[in-house]
Image: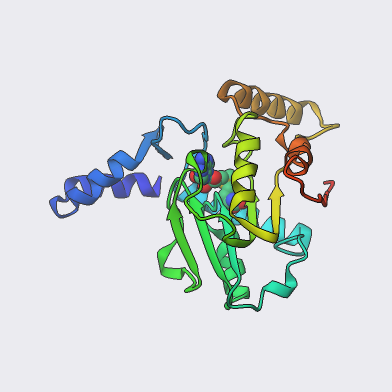
Length: 235
Ligand SMILES: C[S@@+](CC[C@H](N)C(=O)[O-])C[C@H]1O[C@@H](n2cnc3c(N)ncnc32)[C@H](O)[C@@H]1O
């Protein structure tokens, strides 16, 4: 809602009309919410202030549940100024900003189809690039020591997943770590939660994305010749 009203102000203010035109093509507005405007991207969620709040909230919830921001054994690279870390589909960059602040020596890069991070609190060791993962990731082979991707199950179809993992492995250095974090659908739920869950599965099937991607991550990384560690948290 906040973003929507700022768009109206920009439109009525001629000084901001150029900015407004750029935003017009970058975003679309549906029922007062702001979304990306890319035709070939299935991702259905908004990217406005309310969504940014939700992503921050979920980040800190995750960190509290896991008592950490990562599961991979990467402590030894987190004090090395040569270390390059990639956050794929970084969104509001909650994870990236938290990591960049905690480990100020490493370089953290975030990519996303939409820029959603607050620029005024951006840590110096964080850089953002706008990129659509489904069009290939714009980095050379063997660039990153650690790649983190979380909550992208609404972004990829079942056919996309192997290509995405292949692309992530391409830009990961030999001996590097890839951490993929997706949630499983719920089991043993009550009737109201089941209705909600069934509706989400139906919406994902309609969009062509895979509600059960989480269970297939092991297969995707093993097909790339990786050793696989699994960490599960049962709510
Ligand atoms: C649910 S949010 C997760 C954000 C972040 N990873 C986190 O856990 O807080 C998913 C993000 O993926 C981005 N996204 C969706 N499809 C994408 C694509 N094809 N390439 C890059 N980013 C994408 C969206 O714009 C959104 O910011």
